[in-house]
Image (tube, rainbow, N blue to C red; front, side, top):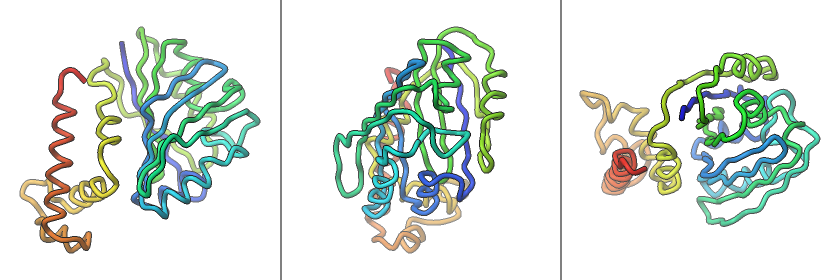
Length: 239
């Protein structure tokens, strides 16, 4: 088995859905299930963010008149429907079912055309980046796939190739994302952005407390519990 990863980056103003991830830095989504045939795609996405961010996401994402996957145009003429499986103030889980995938210029369509069946998809959205990680059998060359995707990108979209390697520790990141709250993500991201994990450290927990405007003990607890979860998932050889 092999896996490869790439990112489609959206400039602001090129996609209504991806613009929300610029507007609301707390917003992020990640699929725990994403499968497709040449005719049908079905997926489950977990979304976290502030209540305001989730409301904005829900309004755009669940609009069945627009396409959340098209790369060449804002919309395509395919059948799609969505079901909210669960919803809280800071998170939601959405099931998507799409028909006529062959008529949509999306990542699953291009991958299946070039790699064939037996593919598993994992994806995430954050801050204008739509990241895909793909597990597939065999050793198919991927140069034509990348060229095909790049040729279909509308203005304002860019393809970045991340890696091609043997499969390992599949889906650990999705399990981490599903277990971390938006508050945990905010604490981790703020810590990374301000150099907390650099050596030597550029900021202290007290500094992060001021940036986040929450008590020092709360920041320390969120960082510790998030770190424990990340290490337990990534370090588990059975994942």
